[in-house]
Length: 627
Image (tube, rainbow, N blue to C red; front, side, top):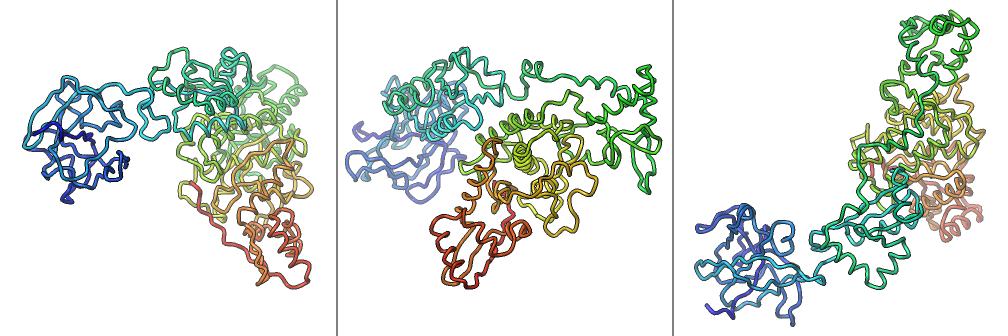
């Protein structure tokens, strides 16, 4: 057969229809050859005129036989041959099949690939076929795709330093994702020890800072300049060919904490050593107190006696030490009724012996004996870690969260470690806005934690124990999702369809309750469901403006509809459940006016002003989770 009739068809590990409609099975063996190969379905590409469009469903040879090939060089002979778009992944050989002339239009070569030149090919013959296997040649620079479509293996990488809630860092992240380029993000808020490296490499702690291999590109402005000039594409082509040197920024080591940072911040509490002794010396037993069976408790006088014996001090000093232990939340009254008293009829327990501990997901067996940090410091760290989680594992609209990846992420591991610092913090030092921000952010963070650790059913039932059984121990007291929302943020009001308030008289947590609830909290709290507001975290300085923005975004997203003709207003079910917060129907309609878009607000204002009746219909709430 003549060479002028030969065409190049890349082999692939896929199966495709033959000219007779029979699928080519890769696992079938040819009588004369080993591993089966087939003709792949490639993207259509023009080859001069319309008559030469590549179509994998068109027959390309007269024979309906299955075509097989096997490279018999070393370990490559054990692999199924791959197409040209996979040669960097599967080996060092490219394959060509030369066919006799066909009456059908011949396919054009796959787009974006350089055509190798024959170089000492190995060949053998089958019936009406000559099969050639020849070495692969390197592709030209211009042929290296950089948009993620059929991209070759990239030897180097892009790395950039970032911080949580940084708008420019988000722009860099979005650009790299759009390009489908592999990148390493080093978030200084997640990995604080890497800040020294950032300063050493760039001369400042400003972010973002982008590196291609070991070369510093600069910040967002430099990236935009390179992209607009076309130099970024050339830089990436170079990166694809050059292996990343050891001097380039390295990926963070997952599973290890920053030892230098921990050494400077973690300090054992001065009372920890005394507590360790008292845990062994105090007579802990189960007792009947006020017709209630109480486990693992001791009398106040018994604790004082143990302190006197250990410190060899007087009773006055012993009582002072006991009160200090109570103020630092190492111990507490069994009913949390009062501060420490040196008495036989007042009973106390160590924090780790509280029966609620198994439901506290920021508690690991024993009390955190480190010196309590300021609550604002711990809250700031938790918010930065949770923001980093959203930026890495949530969709751009913050509705879809990849809980599977979150559960095994380094950001989440560090969050779980840091949240233990809440066990003995002093939350009563928080100001009004600090308190609001702290509990808003903590609620949203706890929802993510609860879904990852507890809820795996894909749906949340408002009436289930999900909101009441997931706790954090904060400042020596347990806080569930319900007690944070209904007890703190809603000023100790009953949960919908409940007959009791979260906090009873004498509960120390009542000191944290504001005089009246802020209605906007309902649109800043996320419960992870499809009908819920999106998850977000707030700043102390801008909490009010951020809550107003959250409410407008929620109502603009379709949670309020005005039917002028039928005089019906359709609203989210959230308002129905918490109508005691919002008031009567007319008060509700007047309140939401400020958060509707201009057209809906105009229609609603018209209905309110004409004096006629208005019917409010509440939408069905979707409790399924967004994954």
